[in-house]
Length: 377
Image (cartoon, one colour):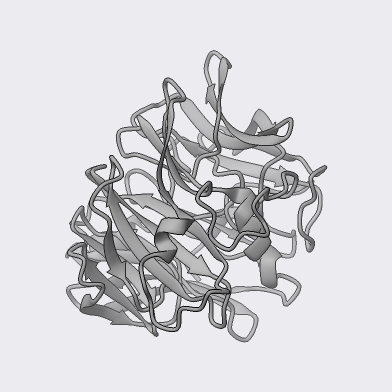
């Protein structure tokens, strides 16, 4: 195993969750994280998660930032650095009978509240896309929030729920698409009883378009991936063949795992893969910054109570294993602890969530600069 250095430790259980957002500040000195005092159950409306940043240049010192009452095991409270900023962080919270987002200046400690919880932030940090976490809780509690009931739970595809765009400076909100609009786009096996939701929003690198997963209750978690322009126009089908995890390669192509492989999809409304990049088991993939998209970082789900962290060198079609980490069987289902590898801004460091050292879920840092250098040589 490539050495994984712990950057958090008991008391408390620490993690960051999903792989698709900035955990590191622009200098790679500070890494964001969350802390709770329990594991192995779903959070309730009363459970609070503590938020902080770890100073990697000062003995991994934990610096308190705040707390949230709107969180889940798989995507946390969407805690992240605001793109384009070296001092603002954003996260979701519950305020009264609704979900909101907070924007904190880590230097002045001044905090603003925005009217909707975020799903993803645009590359320039000016806009957020928003989803409905009460709706998601009905289907996948590991990704939704407890505390605010879905007012439209009895409706299969309500007009009132969908995807919204929010200005991060003004808080202005505009709904871009509804669940009812998704249902009006036919798909194989469609029935009047299909119960829909939207999850996994992601801007492309230019910030001109974004993708979103349209899912509905059914065997095998059926999924369609759509893209849309930032103004809510030009809806396109990116993938109609099921999907699990994704990352944008560039503003025209997304890499999506599905049907046993990482496949490239061109944003051309064909709904078909243009290339099978790598036949491999499912994981959480990211292109490594500064490598001209030649290196891919990913992980695996547990097999024989171990999960693997690995790199893939695309030009050579070569996998480089960074090691296997123990994953006890208690970490399964909605409160599992996926590695969810996150890259530093420089692309030389990786932070993962893992229970492999017996201290519950904690965060670990892995250096990959030497491996990347060998690949270039």
